[in-house]
Image (tube, rainbow, N blue to C red; front, side, top):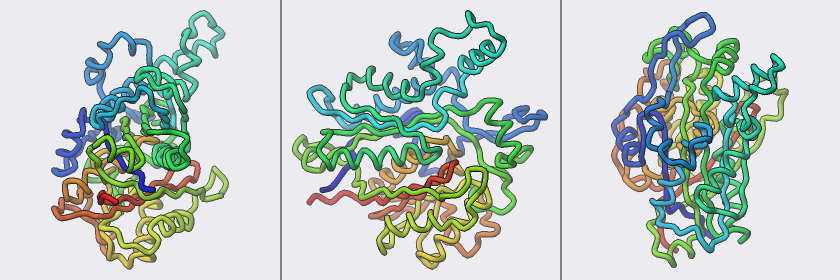
Length: 399
Protein backbone atom coordinates (compact mmCIF):
# COMPACT_ATOMS: atom_id res chain seq x y z
CA UNK A 1 0.00 0.00 0.00
CA UNK A 2 1.44 3.36 -1.06
CA UNK A 3 1.04 6.46 1.09
CA UNK A 4 1.15 9.63 -0.98
CA UNK A 5 1.19 13.35 -0.33
CA UNK A 6 -1.54 15.42 -2.00
CA UNK A 7 -1.02 18.82 -0.37
CA UNK A 8 1.46 20.95 1.54
CA UNK A 9 1.68 24.27 3.34
CA UNK A 10 4.29 26.35 5.16
CA UNK A 11 4.74 29.42 7.33
CA UNK A 12 8.37 30.28 8.03
CA UNK A 13 10.82 33.20 8.09
CA UNK A 14 10.56 35.09 4.79
CA UNK A 15 8.24 32.32 3.58
CA UNK A 16 4.47 32.69 3.47
CA UNK A 17 3.63 30.06 0.85
CA UNK A 18 4.88 26.96 -0.91
CA UNK A 19 5.72 29.04 -3.98
CA UNK A 20 7.97 31.26 -1.88
CA UNK A 21 9.55 28.19 -0.23
CA UNK A 22 10.27 26.71 -3.67
CA UNK A 23 11.87 29.98 -4.80
CA UNK A 24 14.04 30.21 -1.67
CA UNK A 25 15.17 26.59 -1.92
CA UNK A 26 16.05 26.86 -5.60
CA UNK A 27 17.89 30.15 -5.18
CA UNK A 28 19.63 29.41 -1.87
CA UNK A 29 17.99 32.30 -0.02
CA UNK A 30 19.13 32.71 3.58
CA UNK A 31 16.16 33.55 5.82
CA UNK A 32 18.36 33.87 8.92
CA UNK A 33 19.84 37.04 10.33
CA UNK A 34 22.23 38.20 13.02
CA UNK A 35 20.19 39.48 15.97
CA UNK A 36 21.99 41.87 18.28
CA UNK A 37 21.75 41.70 22.06
CA UNK A 38 19.98 38.32 22.36
CA UNK A 39 22.75 36.56 24.27
CA UNK A 40 22.96 36.40 28.07
CA UNK A 41 25.68 39.07 28.10
CA UNK A 42 24.29 41.08 25.23
CA UNK A 43 26.01 39.04 22.54
CA UNK A 44 24.56 38.68 19.07
CA UNK A 45 23.27 35.35 17.80
CA UNK A 46 21.81 34.01 14.56
CA UNK A 47 18.10 33.26 14.32
CA UNK A 48 15.18 32.77 11.95
CA UNK A 49 12.39 35.06 13.15
CA UNK A 50 8.76 35.57 12.22
CA UNK A 51 7.85 39.17 12.93
CA UNK A 52 4.55 40.36 14.41
CA UNK A 53 3.59 42.04 11.14
CA UNK A 54 3.92 38.68 9.39
CA UNK A 55 0.98 37.45 11.47
CA UNK A 56 -1.35 40.37 10.75
CA UNK A 57 -3.39 38.58 8.09
CA UNK A 58 -3.85 35.51 10.30
CA UNK A 59 -4.80 37.59 13.33
CA UNK A 60 -7.56 39.31 11.36
CA UNK A 61 -9.54 36.07 11.79
CA UNK A 62 -11.61 36.45 14.97
CA UNK A 63 -11.41 32.69 15.63
CA UNK A 64 -7.66 32.96 16.17
CA UNK A 65 -7.30 36.08 18.29
CA UNK A 66 -6.79 34.40 21.69
CA UNK A 67 -4.60 31.62 20.38
CA UNK A 68 -0.81 31.63 20.80
CA UNK A 69 1.45 32.58 17.93
CA UNK A 70 2.57 28.97 17.50
CA UNK A 71 -1.04 27.85 16.90
CA UNK A 72 -1.72 30.65 14.42
CA UNK A 73 1.33 29.58 12.44
CA UNK A 74 0.13 25.98 12.45
CA UNK A 75 -3.32 27.02 11.22
CA UNK A 76 -1.77 28.99 8.35
CA UNK A 77 0.29 25.98 7.22
CA UNK A 78 -2.66 23.58 7.49
CA UNK A 79 -4.99 25.92 5.56
CA UNK A 80 -2.53 26.06 2.67
CA UNK A 81 -2.00 22.27 2.77
CA UNK A 82 -5.73 21.55 2.59
CA UNK A 83 -6.23 24.09 -0.20
CA UNK A 84 -3.29 22.55 -2.07
CA UNK A 85 -4.82 19.09 -1.79
CA UNK A 86 -8.34 20.12 -2.84
CA UNK A 87 -9.58 17.99 0.05
CA UNK A 88 -13.00 18.28 1.68
CA UNK A 89 -12.44 17.10 5.26
CA UNK A 90 -16.16 16.75 5.93
CA UNK A 91 -17.57 13.20 6.08
CA UNK A 92 -14.09 11.68 6.34
CA UNK A 93 -12.25 10.03 9.19
CA UNK A 94 -9.52 12.64 9.55
CA UNK A 95 -6.36 12.06 11.54
CA UNK A 96 -4.54 15.19 12.68
CA UNK A 97 -0.96 14.49 13.76
CA UNK A 98 1.12 17.46 14.87
CA UNK A 99 4.60 17.72 16.30
CA UNK A 100 5.97 20.41 18.61
CA UNK A 101 9.06 20.57 20.77
CA UNK A 102 8.24 23.50 23.07
CA UNK A 103 4.61 24.30 22.21
CA UNK A 104 3.63 27.78 23.42
CA UNK A 105 5.97 27.76 26.42
CA UNK A 106 8.35 30.22 24.77
CA UNK A 107 5.66 32.86 24.34
CA UNK A 108 5.28 36.04 26.39
CA UNK A 109 1.91 35.17 27.94
CA UNK A 110 3.32 31.90 29.23
CA UNK A 111 6.47 33.54 30.59
CA UNK A 112 4.46 36.32 32.25
CA UNK A 113 2.05 33.86 33.87
CA UNK A 114 4.93 31.84 35.30
CA UNK A 115 6.39 35.06 36.72
CA UNK A 116 3.08 36.07 38.35
CA UNK A 117 2.58 32.58 39.74
CA UNK A 118 6.04 32.68 41.32
CA UNK A 119 5.15 36.05 42.87
CA UNK A 120 1.90 34.52 44.18
CA UNK A 121 -0.11 37.05 42.17
CA UNK A 122 -2.68 34.47 41.17
CA UNK A 123 -5.21 36.96 39.80
CA UNK A 124 -2.67 38.11 37.20
CA UNK A 125 -2.17 34.61 35.82
CA UNK A 126 -3.86 34.48 32.41
CA UNK A 127 -7.22 32.73 32.18
CA UNK A 128 -5.92 30.79 29.17
CA UNK A 129 -2.53 29.93 30.69
CA UNK A 130 -3.48 26.24 31.01
CA UNK A 131 -3.90 26.02 27.24
CA UNK A 132 -0.55 27.69 26.62
CA UNK A 133 1.08 25.14 28.91
CA UNK A 134 -0.73 22.19 27.29
CA UNK A 135 0.98 21.20 24.02
CA UNK A 136 -2.07 19.27 22.81
CA UNK A 137 -4.17 22.44 22.90
CA UNK A 138 -2.27 23.48 19.76
CA UNK A 139 -3.39 20.40 17.83
CA UNK A 140 -6.91 20.57 19.25
CA UNK A 141 -7.25 24.25 18.22
CA UNK A 142 -6.05 23.49 14.68
CA UNK A 143 -8.50 20.58 14.47
CA UNK A 144 -11.38 22.77 15.61
CA UNK A 145 -10.46 25.49 13.12
CA UNK A 146 -10.56 23.13 10.11
CA UNK A 147 -13.60 21.22 11.34
CA UNK A 148 -11.85 17.89 11.90
CA UNK A 149 -13.33 15.75 14.67
CA UNK A 150 -11.46 12.50 14.33
CA UNK A 151 -8.16 11.27 15.74
CA UNK A 152 -5.89 14.04 17.04
CA UNK A 153 -2.38 13.33 18.27
CA UNK A 154 0.41 15.59 19.50
CA UNK A 155 3.94 14.22 19.19
CA UNK A 156 6.74 15.85 21.17
CA UNK A 157 10.10 14.15 20.71
CA UNK A 158 12.29 17.19 20.29
CA UNK A 159 13.40 18.12 16.77
CA UNK A 160 12.12 14.81 15.36
CA UNK A 161 8.54 15.57 16.44
CA UNK A 162 6.99 16.35 13.05
CA UNK A 163 8.84 13.58 11.21
CA UNK A 164 7.66 11.09 13.82
CA UNK A 165 4.16 12.53 13.35
CA UNK A 166 4.48 11.40 9.72
CA UNK A 167 5.52 7.95 10.96
CA UNK A 168 2.40 7.70 13.16
CA UNK A 169 0.14 8.97 10.37
CA UNK A 170 1.40 6.29 7.98
CA UNK A 171 0.57 3.58 10.52
CA UNK A 172 -2.95 4.95 11.02
CA UNK A 173 -3.57 5.18 7.26
CA UNK A 174 -2.30 1.67 6.57
CA UNK A 175 -4.43 0.24 9.39
CA UNK A 176 -7.56 1.93 8.03
CA UNK A 177 -8.19 3.83 11.27
CA UNK A 178 -8.28 7.12 9.33
CA UNK A 179 -9.21 8.04 5.75
CA UNK A 180 -6.82 10.94 5.45
CA UNK A 181 -4.04 12.36 7.61
CA UNK A 182 -3.11 16.01 8.05
CA UNK A 183 0.40 16.01 9.42
CA UNK A 184 2.74 18.77 10.47
CA UNK A 185 4.55 20.68 13.14
CA UNK A 186 4.77 24.15 14.62
CA UNK A 187 7.25 25.71 17.02
CA UNK A 188 8.10 29.22 18.19
CA UNK A 189 10.89 28.48 20.67
CA UNK A 190 12.92 31.69 20.73
CA UNK A 191 12.92 33.37 24.13
CA UNK A 192 15.41 34.30 26.85
CA UNK A 193 15.17 30.90 28.52
CA UNK A 194 16.07 28.90 25.40
CA UNK A 195 18.70 31.40 24.29
CA UNK A 196 20.43 31.40 27.67
CA UNK A 197 20.17 27.61 28.07
CA UNK A 198 21.75 26.85 24.70
CA UNK A 199 24.34 29.57 25.26
CA UNK A 200 25.37 27.77 28.45
CA UNK A 201 25.86 24.52 26.56
CA UNK A 202 27.72 26.36 23.79
CA UNK A 203 25.38 25.11 21.07
CA UNK A 204 24.25 28.44 19.60
CA UNK A 205 26.61 30.87 17.89
CA UNK A 206 27.43 34.00 19.89
CA UNK A 207 29.06 36.96 18.14
CA UNK A 208 29.53 35.01 14.91
CA UNK A 209 28.67 36.29 11.45
CA UNK A 210 26.48 34.46 8.94
CA UNK A 211 29.68 33.27 7.28
CA UNK A 212 30.96 31.76 10.54
CA UNK A 213 28.02 30.56 12.65
CA UNK A 214 25.13 28.12 12.32
CA UNK A 215 26.74 26.72 9.17
CA UNK A 216 26.19 23.01 8.45
CA UNK A 217 29.25 21.01 7.43
CA UNK A 218 31.79 23.65 8.43
CA UNK A 219 34.37 23.26 11.14
CA UNK A 220 34.42 26.35 13.33
CA UNK A 221 30.68 26.90 13.33
CA UNK A 222 29.77 27.32 16.97
CA UNK A 223 26.25 25.96 17.06
CA UNK A 224 22.88 26.15 15.33
CA UNK A 225 20.43 28.94 14.53
CA UNK A 226 17.18 28.80 16.48
CA UNK A 227 14.23 29.41 14.22
CA UNK A 228 10.43 29.41 14.25
CA UNK A 229 8.13 27.92 11.62
CA UNK A 230 5.16 25.72 10.83
CA UNK A 231 4.60 23.19 8.08
CA UNK A 232 1.91 20.68 7.13
CA UNK A 233 1.17 18.00 4.53
CA UNK A 234 -1.88 15.95 3.56
CA UNK A 235 -1.33 12.19 3.33
CA UNK A 236 -3.69 9.66 1.74
CA UNK A 237 -3.72 6.07 0.57
CA UNK A 238 -2.85 5.96 -3.11
CA UNK A 239 -6.18 4.43 -4.20
CA UNK A 240 -8.14 7.14 -2.41
CA UNK A 241 -6.05 9.95 -3.91
CA UNK A 242 -6.32 8.47 -7.41
CA UNK A 243 -10.07 7.97 -7.06
CA UNK A 244 -10.64 11.64 -6.30
CA UNK A 245 -8.12 12.66 -9.03
CA UNK A 246 -5.85 14.44 -6.60
CA UNK A 247 -2.56 16.02 -7.67
CA UNK A 248 -0.08 13.64 -6.05
CA UNK A 249 3.16 15.34 -5.01
CA UNK A 250 5.16 12.26 -4.08
CA UNK A 251 5.26 9.01 -2.10
CA UNK A 252 6.36 8.63 1.53
CA UNK A 253 7.86 5.14 1.50
CA UNK A 254 8.76 4.80 5.17
CA UNK A 255 9.88 6.53 8.35
CA UNK A 256 12.11 4.78 10.90
CA UNK A 257 12.75 6.21 14.37
CA UNK A 258 14.76 5.15 17.41
CA UNK A 259 16.56 6.60 20.42
CA UNK A 260 20.26 6.78 21.30
CA UNK A 261 19.45 5.18 24.65
CA UNK A 262 21.93 7.19 26.70
CA UNK A 263 21.60 9.48 29.72
CA UNK A 264 19.74 12.65 28.76
CA UNK A 265 22.57 14.77 30.19
CA UNK A 266 25.07 13.08 27.87
CA UNK A 267 25.61 13.09 24.11
CA UNK A 268 25.98 10.06 21.86
CA UNK A 269 29.24 10.67 20.04
CA UNK A 270 29.10 7.41 18.11
CA UNK A 271 26.01 8.08 16.00
CA UNK A 272 25.28 4.34 15.96
CA UNK A 273 21.52 4.73 16.22
CA UNK A 274 21.34 7.39 13.51
CA UNK A 275 23.33 5.09 11.28
CA UNK A 276 21.03 2.16 12.14
CA UNK A 277 17.89 4.18 11.35
CA UNK A 278 19.28 5.40 8.03
CA UNK A 279 20.44 1.90 7.10
CA UNK A 280 17.01 0.46 7.89
CA UNK A 281 15.05 3.07 5.95
CA UNK A 282 17.29 3.00 2.85
CA UNK A 283 17.43 -0.82 2.72
CA UNK A 284 20.53 -0.81 0.54
CA UNK A 285 19.07 1.69 -1.93
CA UNK A 286 21.11 4.65 -3.19
CA UNK A 287 18.95 7.79 -3.02
CA UNK A 288 19.63 10.70 -5.34
CA UNK A 289 20.64 12.72 -2.28
CA UNK A 290 20.36 12.95 1.50
CA UNK A 291 18.29 15.81 2.94
CA UNK A 292 20.43 16.01 6.06
CA UNK A 293 19.89 17.19 9.63
CA UNK A 294 23.34 18.84 9.71
CA UNK A 295 22.96 22.17 11.51
CA UNK A 296 26.33 23.59 12.51
CA UNK A 297 26.98 21.63 15.71
CA UNK A 298 30.22 19.79 15.00
CA UNK A 299 29.31 16.54 16.77
CA UNK A 300 26.01 16.17 14.91
CA UNK A 301 27.56 17.00 11.56
CA UNK A 302 30.37 14.49 12.13
CA UNK A 303 27.75 11.78 12.65
CA UNK A 304 26.33 12.68 9.22
CA UNK A 305 29.86 12.36 7.85
CA UNK A 306 30.18 8.89 9.37
CA UNK A 307 26.84 7.79 7.85
CA UNK A 308 27.91 9.12 4.46
CA UNK A 309 31.15 7.13 4.58
CA UNK A 310 29.85 3.84 5.99
CA UNK A 311 26.60 3.57 4.06
CA UNK A 312 27.40 5.31 0.76
CA UNK A 313 31.21 5.68 0.62
CA UNK A 314 30.59 9.43 0.13
CA UNK A 315 29.05 8.75 -3.30
CA UNK A 316 25.57 10.06 -2.45
CA UNK A 317 25.22 13.87 -2.35
CA UNK A 318 24.36 15.51 0.98
CA UNK A 319 22.65 18.83 1.60
CA UNK A 320 21.08 20.69 4.53
CA UNK A 321 18.27 23.25 4.30
CA UNK A 322 19.18 24.38 7.84
CA UNK A 323 21.79 26.62 6.24
CA UNK A 324 18.81 28.61 4.89
CA UNK A 325 16.15 28.08 7.58
CA UNK A 326 18.00 27.25 10.78
CA UNK A 327 16.48 24.77 13.19
CA UNK A 328 12.80 25.38 14.04
CA UNK A 329 12.92 22.52 16.56
CA UNK A 330 9.95 20.17 16.13
CA UNK A 331 9.13 21.56 12.68
CA UNK A 332 12.37 20.83 10.86
CA UNK A 333 11.35 17.28 9.93
CA UNK A 334 8.21 18.36 8.07
CA UNK A 335 10.14 21.18 6.36
CA UNK A 336 12.63 18.57 5.15
CA UNK A 337 9.75 16.42 3.87
CA UNK A 338 8.18 19.33 1.99
CA UNK A 339 11.50 20.44 0.51
CA UNK A 340 12.12 16.85 -0.64
CA UNK A 341 8.66 16.68 -2.24
CA UNK A 342 9.39 19.91 -4.14
CA UNK A 343 12.74 18.47 -5.18
CA UNK A 344 11.05 15.33 -6.54
CA UNK A 345 8.44 17.38 -8.39
CA UNK A 346 10.62 20.11 -9.85
CA UNK A 347 13.89 18.27 -10.41
CA UNK A 348 16.53 19.99 -8.28
CA UNK A 349 18.75 19.46 -5.25
CA UNK A 350 18.76 22.48 -2.91
CA UNK A 351 22.17 23.73 -1.82
CA UNK A 352 23.85 23.91 1.55
CA UNK A 353 24.54 27.63 1.42
CA UNK A 354 27.21 29.55 3.34
CA UNK A 355 29.48 26.54 3.95
CA UNK A 356 33.15 26.33 2.96
CA UNK A 357 33.02 22.54 3.63
CA UNK A 358 36.05 22.99 5.91
CA UNK A 359 36.57 19.70 7.75
CA UNK A 360 34.12 17.86 5.49
CA UNK A 361 36.01 17.98 2.19
CA UNK A 362 35.69 14.23 1.58
CA UNK A 363 31.88 14.38 1.62
CA UNK A 364 29.82 15.00 -1.50
CA UNK A 365 28.16 18.20 -0.21
CA UNK A 366 25.98 20.21 -2.59
CA UNK A 367 26.80 23.93 -2.29
CA UNK A 368 25.12 25.17 -5.49
CA UNK A 369 21.65 24.23 -6.72
CA UNK A 370 21.74 21.24 -9.05
CA UNK A 371 18.94 20.88 -11.60
CA UNK A 372 18.31 17.27 -12.59
CA UNK A 373 15.72 14.52 -12.24
CA UNK A 374 15.30 13.42 -8.62
CA UNK A 375 13.61 10.06 -8.04
CA UNK A 376 14.45 9.16 -4.44
CA UNK A 377 15.45 11.15 -1.34
CA UNK A 378 16.43 10.06 2.16
CA UNK A 379 15.99 12.36 5.17
CA UNK A 380 17.96 12.33 8.42
CA UNK A 381 16.70 14.03 11.57
CA UNK A 382 17.92 14.10 15.18
CA UNK A 383 16.24 15.48 18.29
CA UNK A 384 17.30 16.82 21.67
CA UNK A 385 16.69 13.88 24.01
CA UNK A 386 18.31 11.36 21.68
CA UNK A 387 15.60 10.53 19.15
CA UNK A 388 16.59 9.84 15.56
CA UNK A 389 14.16 9.69 12.63
CA UNK A 390 14.92 8.92 9.01
CA UNK A 391 12.53 8.93 6.06
CA UNK A 392 12.61 7.63 2.50
CA UNK A 393 10.65 9.32 -0.27
CA UNK A 394 10.05 8.64 -3.96
CA UNK A 395 8.78 10.42 -7.02
CA UNK A 396 5.22 9.20 -7.52
CA UNK A 397 4.63 6.50 -10.14
CA UNK A 398 1.08 5.20 -10.42
CA UNK A 399 0.71 1.55 -9.38
